[in-house]
Length: 139
Image (cartoon, rainbow, N blue to C red; front, side):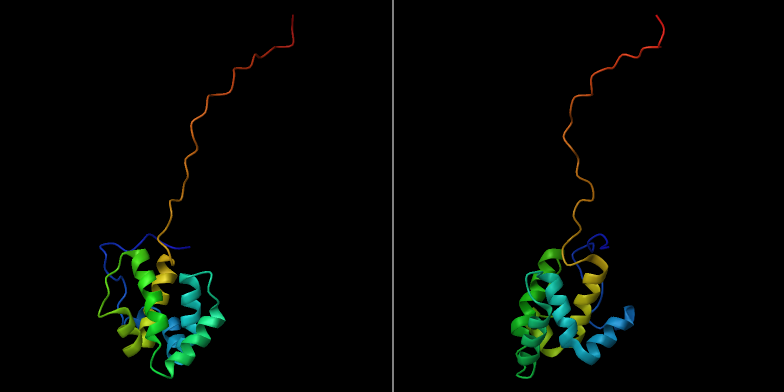
């Protein structure tokens, strides 16, 4: 379950904070295309994990992965009110791809892809039920 949104409008985990979650770091190191597909489908549930992975893989080998990954990172940042650090979203994915995907995966794992919604919905007030008479069985 996702926790409360990060406070202060700053990234709660660094771009090079892989030791905060070694499993995600290893996944991103060995196959960050697959991890990106998972992150992208978490950010935009209408997108296919496999489709995002394949597009990222094709663009990665032309050094153009920032074209597909940058807008997804921007969506995640906008949802959590995070600044574009350390540089623009496309640049982060072009020059630090595996680290960017790992950072996004840590954010999603801890806070969810969207800010936490209100846990309780209050129902409108209604009139109390009518009083009922109690009879004791005697006359």
